[in-house]
Figure 1 (cartoon, rainbow, N blue to C red):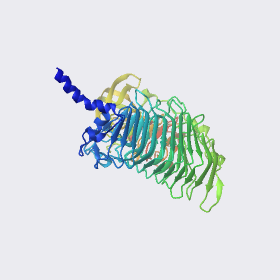
Figure 2: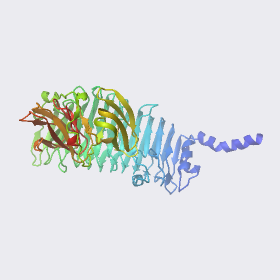
Figure 3: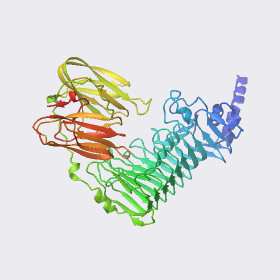
Length: 633
């Protein structure tokens, strides 16, 4: 027994001594030039306060490594840390990750490179599709420092800062002197952070999967926080989408973000903010300040502000310069397509604009809402040297509020009276309409038997789980059944004992779905806005009842760059109203000189991205993919 304890003590001595010392060299734990993962992980797990990743003359090739609390991980001058080929197979494998840790520093001394293998991860099926193979990831962690590093070519973000269920947001984070280059999704993503400083960094050359920005501050849910966040003295260039994007769901806690002394150039767009209300109509509170920033040489709009509304968050631009002489499109884009409010709460202080030959403004409006309380001092310098000031009052007059348009009433559907107007389905290949979000499908059987209802799910992000729940009811609201669509292609047998109307409520999902059936009557409710995903031309048929002389249909391009083109055709196929590449909402009006009989009309719809439609009263708010399946009373 005595000999056993002697041997045990001898075995533990190295670990006990490492824990006692202030610092250790990682290579002393058995450096392997082909795979140094175990060596580095042992050094981190040793308990030493400082772990020095020393320069062995060869790269440190590693699989994912876990960080711990109370750690200073120092990369010596000249060190290169590279991702192990064939590793990072899990969709969320990160080079360095820390969850619920505190007092952690990652810093370089001299020239240090952390590099993953983005091009490998982009190859399917070699790797599962993912946007979360980050280089450095912290969740719910406190007192974090990341500095003096070059971070390249991750399969997700260069750096990811988020919350955890245990600790909430990351707190007291410093990111300084970082070059974040060539990442798949973002140079830096901030999901939830309090007391965050990002200083003297470059976020460049992001390309792979959306959003593809230098920095994206984008919380996931209302409990996340962006409080006391400062971005200063940073550069953003070469990113496939934006330099800086701030995309906010409604947050319980007011936001406070300052972007100061930054240069944003050579991206697709420059600065973008987007705020939303929640389902209860609560308005986002807080403030965003851009100060002493230069935005120039971007391909599209240098400044896009969305979702600003009364009594909500303010966006202030102070001493900023927007040079759009080498770009295309409007200098400033204001968009309220996702909120039911006039655009307001934007203040300019001593800003300068070089528009070149581009228009100053693009306004994307939701039905009935305009521009209000955009104000401040903006000097406009034309190519000929002429200097003028933006006239905000003029812009408001050009985009006024329209109370009448805000009153968009739809007709209640008398489900028990619905019948197919014709009941003869053509033999053409059925149209595919991809719905994004919730939808309500109506299906009428004209005889007893089994009828196929076909569902096809098209994932927006491959390999993400989906599960559409479908609730089937009769016209009198009697529940028939519930089932889940959990396969990409799914067919449900609907048993009918005769002439029956079935209502299929398809609940919301993050993916897209299309539904088809050869029943005598088939269509979709379009009372409230129904979200359609991009695709080819959609031909929608609907019934105009006897006595209806005038009606209106709203088509909505969801937002900036998400336009919709529409043609409203009467029963003889003549175009009576139209819009082309319209962002925001537009009303199409149908007028009939002879309203003595019912007719089947057609709406042709094409959207570049997400778009939606809704039908105003007195129309029956139902559209069908085939003229033979149209519903009427």
